[in-house]
Image 1 (cartoon, helix red, strand yellow):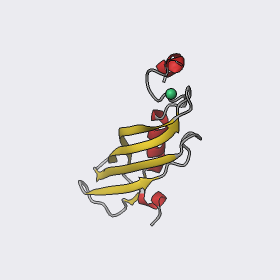
Image 2 (cartoon, protein in one colour):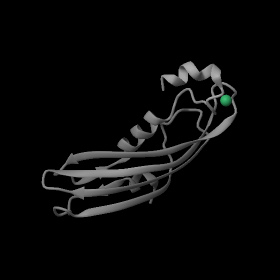
Image 3 (cartoon, rainbow, N blue to C red):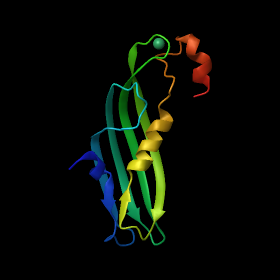
Image 4 (tube, protein in one colour):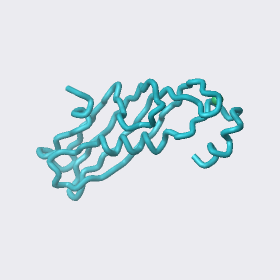
Length: 128
Ligand SMILES: [Zn+2]
């Protein structure tokens, strides 16, 4: 099973209050910033069916390797993120990938700094 499929959950046969837990190791986020060298990302999420909606709550953890925008050294940037999203109750399948990708991209700085001491980037970093 490929990673993309693992982020899809069939919800058509869920009854109210049923839940499905999904763990995905080594997820690769495709549209992350170009300078990312390595990604070690795990995702776990819970899909729960309610009368009026399908609720998905998840956690993204791991790290990515990116280059500092100042000194150009690569460093590990940790990811410890969580997300919550609801979907219409009548969906036959929930695809969490879009949500996961958005959360990761929003949290990866596009002007990354290896440390606060790389001060030339401080002004840019302050906006991130
Ligand atoms: Zn640096």
